[in-house]
View (cartoon, rainbow, N blue to C red):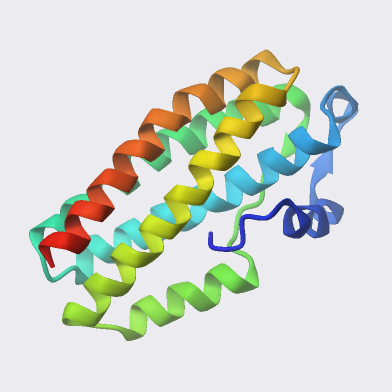
Length: 167
C-alpha cells in the first residue's frame, strides 16, 4: 500500500471492469475505489502475517485489528462497487507483493519494526486519500465510505505508532 499516489491507480484502471454504472463515477472516484480496494487487500494480508509473526503483543493486536476492520471495510467497498457495476481487484499488485515478501522474510524485532513503520506510512497516506475523497466526491456512497474510514485509519495509525514506541 506504499504507492498510494493516484498515478499508479490510473495505470491499473485498464483492468478495472466497469459496467454501465462506471460512467456515473468520475475518473478520480474510479481511481479511489481501485486504490482503496488494493490497500484493503494488502492490509488484511499484512495483518494476518502480523498475527502469526508478531513478536510483541502490540503488533499482534494491531494485526488482528487490521484484519477485522479492513475485512469489514473491504465488504462495504465491494457493495458500493457492485452497485456501480465494478469488479474490484482480487490480488495485490507487484509492489505490494514485494513488500509482503519482505515482511515474510523478516522475523523478531526486525519484523515488528518493519511492520509498524509500514503501517504508519500507509495509514498516514490513506488518511489523506480518504479526506480528499470525502471532500471531492459527488457520490454519496463513496463520501460515506471515506468519511467513515478516516477515524478507522486514525485508530490504526495511533496503534501502529504505539506499537513502534513500545518495541
